[in-house]
Amino acid sequence: MKKTWYLITAIVLLVVSGVAYGYHEYSKPKTAQELKIVRVAYLPITHALPVFATKELETADGPVHVELVKYGSWPELMDALNTGKVDAAAVLVELGVKAREQGIDVRAAALGHTEGNIIVVNNDINSVQDLKGKFFAVPHKQSTQKILVDLMLERAGLSEKDVQIVEMSPPEMPSALSVGQIAGYSVAEPFGSLAIEMGKGKVFEDPDHLWHDNICCALVFNGQFVDEHHDLAKAFTKAYLDAGKYLDEHPEAQKEIALKYMKFKDPVIERSLQVIGFGDLALTEERYKALVHHMTHVDLIKKVPSYSEFVDTSLLP
Image (cartoon, rainbow, N blue to C red; front, side, top):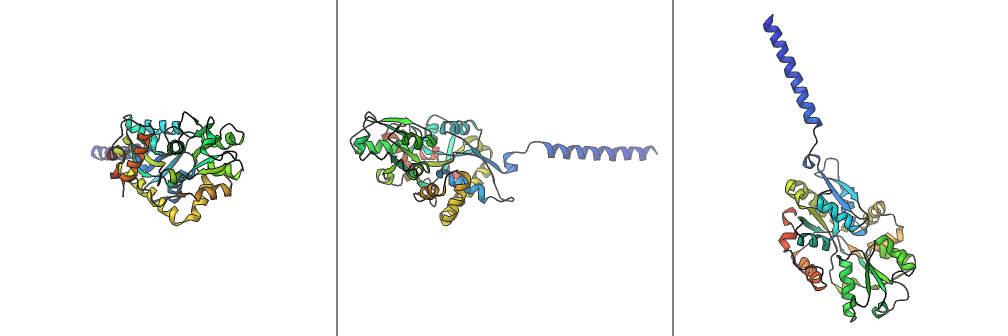
């Protein structure tokens, strides 16, 4: 009888232990790798469309799931990326390079787009010389938009001593232009097209004439996330590049996805999509050299990170 009792007790203990262990395994926090989640920061601009498309194209049983985190300014977004509050971001590439120069471990994997920038002025401006003594806005001093303005001024024999360059949030630019607070601005779409559709501004310079094949935004990862979840970061990069290819091959999907994430009227979105490309998102060494050449030329950077320091090619498919 005792033997039977001991056996029953042992069986009960085993069952209880098994249930307790199963509950513990079920209830303990899952890692990002197990959940397949990548937290990606963005600003609601056309340049972030591949991130939006990656989210739209994901499947329940796919290799990665995107958690989009919206920010209202580049400094706020970059702080989140640098400190690991997010795992990756669609961000101004110059901000990524500058962070790397400062010793912050961020690593780029791909571009966000090609072209897609615009320079807009009010209807009274007819030449670069007309900008003398006036205010001209850029979204951030560390940006392709700022580089384009400096190149435009230089070509006309002017400099920042002649024009007041100010930082301004892109959503504020069209209204600032309409009331005469600024004479013009350089920005990511669709905020240039918005001023044009409002009848408050006009296209002033073709950015491609100032810097051919200019690049602006990039997919940049937090370095610690890459080290701890390399396979997941690589899976996201592949999904992101596939999304860019999808956008390029399905132009009708560009507008549909853009309207879901950006609250603009159809004509503004349609116009903004005419001047941007998503088919070639490779951040090549040649493109990187052109970028850091311009950054150095306009004094945005002193110590240039090497290509291999900034671009993590191990994340590419």
